Image (cartoon, rainbow, N blue to C red; front, side, top):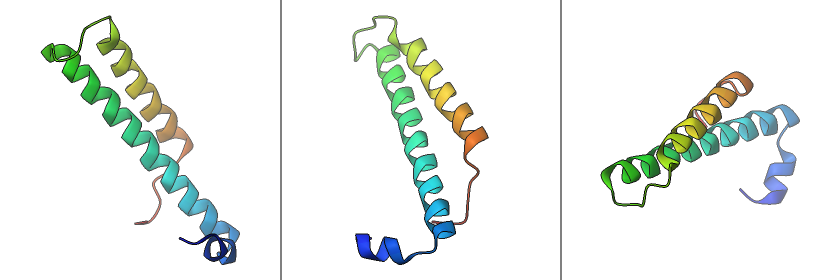
Length: 75
């Protein structure tokens, strides 16, 4: 979306789209953390105690965003 198009959107629409983008970004981070944890479990990556930390990180990201950002529309 071009910046000038964004600025012409009503503020409420900008807010809805921003929240959905943040929700998707948080879900992407959580998924990547889980994938890294699985790689550690398989032995593909060196285990330095990171798998459980990544799972905890994923859970925290999801829990924080479930409370803060409601799913909106079908952006």
